[in-house]
Image 1 (tube, rainbow, N blue to C red):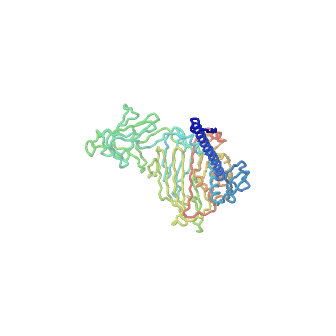
Image 2 (tube, rainbow, N blue to C red):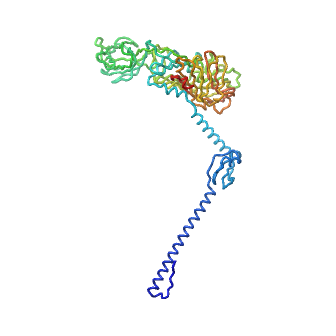
Image 3 (cartoon, rainbow, N blue to C red):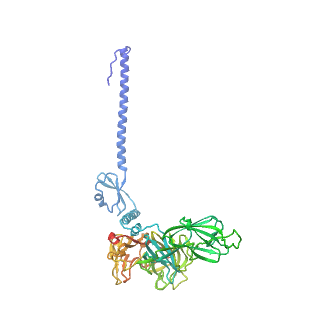
Length: 579
C-alpha cells in the first residue's frame, strides 16, 4: 500500500493524494476482511473435521472377544466401531487404540446375528442344491391333457403325459379301514394298439339352452354344441323321450359327411355311434339342432321338440360323448411302491393313557383317520359317483381336498388330532400339503414326513440334492444313515445306472417344499441319529424315511406341517447325466 505525503491539502495535487490515500485504505481494509473470513472458514472446517472424527461411528461386524479386534480389523481407521459378543462392550478406533464407548445387552444382538448368519448359510446351502423334481419337470412338460379313471370307492388313477406315447401313472386311494386318500403307487405306462375309450363333456354351446340337470337341451333351431376329441370313433350320449328332436353332426367342417340323429324315443342315457373309421387324430364336431323329428311329432306339440345331450355333473359315468382312440395304456415300469405311506406316518397314543400307540393313517388294518369333509375334484367338478369306470376322462387338474379327524381305537370319542390335506396333480407332477393339529396331548413313539418308497427292481441308487449317493440294492432289512444330509437336503431321486432298458431313461424324484416344517428343524424329539435314512426292507422295497419324531410329546394346539412334491418322468440318459 502506498501513502502520499500531503504538503498543501487545498491544492489539486493535495486533494488527489488525499483521494488516493483513502482508496488505498479501503482496499487494505477489504483485503484484511477477506483474509480474516478465509482464515475463519479454514479454522471452522478443521474444527468441524476434528469434531466429526471424534464422534463418527462406522459399524463393523462383531467379534467374539476384545483380543480379536486387531487381528480381525488390522487396518481399521478412526471411527470404526465393533461390539464384542462375550460382554456386549462397544469399542471405537481412535488413532491406534480401541476405546470402549458403550456397553449393551449382547443377548438380543447375538441372537439376531446368529439368526442372520444361519439364514445366510441356509440360503447359500439351498442355492447349492439340485431340485430333482424341477429337473425332471423341465424335461417332461407337455401340452397334452391328463387322463383320469375311477377304479372304485375313492380310488382314482391319473395318467400324466410325458410324451405322445408315454405317461406317468399315479394311483390315489383310501385303505380298507379308514378314509384318508393318499398316494398309493406310481409307474410309467405306454400306449398300446388296443382301443382306448375316453368320455368327455361338450366344450361349448351356442343359442338358448336349459342346463339345470345332467340332461341338457335346447328348443332353438340352429343352436349348437361343439366338442373336440382325439380318436377314430365318435359316440354321442343323450337323454331320449317323446319330446326329442333331431341333431345334425359335422366333423372337421366336412358337410359332405354329415350325420343326423333323433333323440325321440326312450333312453336315460342312450349312446349312439355317429362317426367311425376316422383318422386316429384330433377332430372337432359341431352338432346343430334341426328341430322336430319328421317321423315323430313331439308329444308336447309340433315345433316344441328338444335337442337332448347328456352332461356329466359328477354323479354318473356317462358324458356328452365318447371318443375311441388307439392306445390303451399299459404298464411299463413299477416305480413308487404301493401301500407304503408317502405323505406322513405318526405313531401316537393319548398322553398317560396306557393305550398302545397306533399309526396315523391306517397301519396293520387298524383305521385311525376318518372323514370330516372330503372332496375329489376333476377340473373343479366334484366326483360323487365312485362306481368303477371302464373308460378315461380327460382333465387338466385333479385335487383331493380333505379335512379329517384322527381317533385312537381305544378312545374313539375323543379325537387326538385333525388333519387338513390337499393333493394336487397336474402335468407338473404331484404336490401334497398337510397340516396336523393335535387336539389333545399325545405321546409320539415315531413319526415321519415325506417318505419315498420305490421298488427294488427299479432303482439301484438314491441320490440327494447335496449330490451324495447311496446304493439301494441290499435286501436284508438293514438301513443306511444319510449322515451328511442331516436335515438340510431338499430333494432326492432314484435312478438305475446298471440296466439298459427304459429304467436307464427314467427317474423318480421327491422335493421338500417346506423344509422347516417337514424336518421340524430346530425342534427336539427327533431321531438322534441322522434324520434321513434309507431302509433296504426287502427284495421288493427300498424306502427313504425322514424321521422327524422319536420318543417325544406333542401338546394340544401344536401342529406338524408337511409339504412336498413327487414326480415320475423320462430323462434320456438319466443314469449318465446324474451320475
